[in-house]
Structures are given as C-alpha cells and as structure tokens.
Image (cartoon, rainbow, N blue to C red; front, side, top):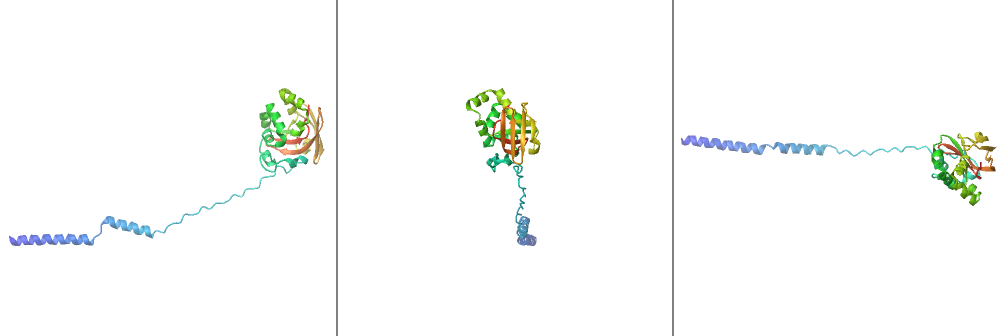
Length: 225
C-alpha cells in the first residue's frame, strides 16, 4: 500500500516538473504575434510622401482690344481695368461705357432714359458716344430741360445709334440712326467726322472701340436730331 502511494507521489511530481519545463521553454502565442508584427514594422521602409508636381499653365497674353482703335482721344483711355480697351471689350456697350470716366454724362443720360438694358441687349450696333465735354457744350438750362423730358432724351440718345458693328471702312457714308435720323460719316485714316440734321460736325476722338455687342466711336459733340 505504501509502495503504491510512493509511486503515485513520484508520478505527480514528474508531471508537475514536466509542465513547468514546458512553460519555461514555450512562448505565449500573443507575445509571438506581437514580436512578429513589431519586426515587420521595423523592417518595412518608410515611404516618403511624394511631392505633387505643379505645372504652371502657360497663359496666353490677352489680345490687345485697342490695337485697331484710332484718334487723338484714345490716349485718354486707361491702360488697365474695366475702363481700358480690354476691359470694355468684354462688356455690353452700356456697361462698358459706365466704366469710362470720359462718358459719365452719357451714362447718366442713358440711365435716365431707361436705355441701359435696351443697349446692352442689342445684338450688334454702332454707337457714337459723346464725351462729358460734348454734353458740356449744351447750355445748362437746355440740358436740364432735355434730362427732364424722357421722350426727347430718348430721341437724342438713339440718334447716336445705328444697326450693325461698323468698321471704319463700313461706317463711312450715310447711316440711318435708330431715332430715324440721317447721320453722315466722312473721313479716313485717323480723321473722321459725323454730322446730323441738328449738328454741323462732330469729330471722332477715338474710333473703332470694341465692346461685347457694339463698336463705339467717341465723339466731341452731341448729334442732335
């Protein structure tokens, strides 16, 4: 009986030692996986972020909208901005005129006559645009009366407009204004004049000015119908 007990004790001791050795010699699977992941991370080369290559677009220089203009008054047109030839070329005629300091009185008259939308929406027209000094030639009292008479003001303003975008070659001759009056344009090179029933002569100060929907000839005298 004692022999059996001793054998059982020895067997239990042997089993305990065997488990202990196994525990010391083996590694925890979780630790093994963690070590493997760590080694993989350290061995993987770090990729440097790629620098984005920026390509600068080669922009073509803007076309010179004033290349074909003529006349002594063209030098008064600003070189840059909305009032420049390039600036006016992108806008319909009334909007283009509103940016030009030479045409402030004309713009005020056009606004008073409610012709801004009419001129801006016209498909193709030619406008003889009187400068501020041109309107200043009209006596103040007479100008006040004209501005107060919308019908008369409209007639005077539309007497400065003809159909079609007319080049210097095409504008020469007799032209019928939108007011029904006859305009007579003479000239060549850089010297052009315009006459109407109520105006003996109006000189073109700066001609062949392009806008989005019109060709403009800036003149020094209002063309009375």
